[in-house]
View (tube, rainbow, N blue to C red):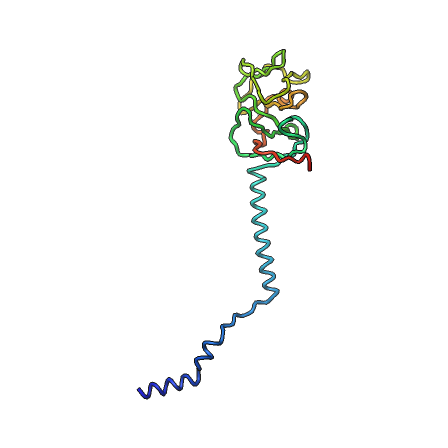
Length: 197
């Protein structure tokens, strides 16, 4: 037992208890240039991921269209920004679509689908499959255009008959004919007002 006490005293001489407890463990300092490079690399990686997400969202899922005419008045005005969804497999009556004809984009409301017969009566009423349509949100008469397509017309497969809300002078299927699914960019899901900015 005396031998153990002597050894313990010897160890304490070489390694005092206070010095072991009081000395903090020092971490090696990083080189400031290396640390800055790591931060830049991390920032660029995050920015790249964000750009990839935005590209996928607005290149494949959603799209933006600046309205450049009054064809959809009074609901949508020139200068408004419409956000549309690209991935819908089909569209329903009443939905507003963004479509393209000869490289130019337009907005139009679906009034007839594939297989429907569209006509416009002499007294400017829209007629679908022999029935006159009562459109409570349309405030203008639906007239024929002299330079438009000949009516009645049957909407072919994978096509839609689209009309503007501003029926007097708006460019729509009365001029272009039924719009093919391949020419439709997507369905408008919201409109951001930019006209007063």
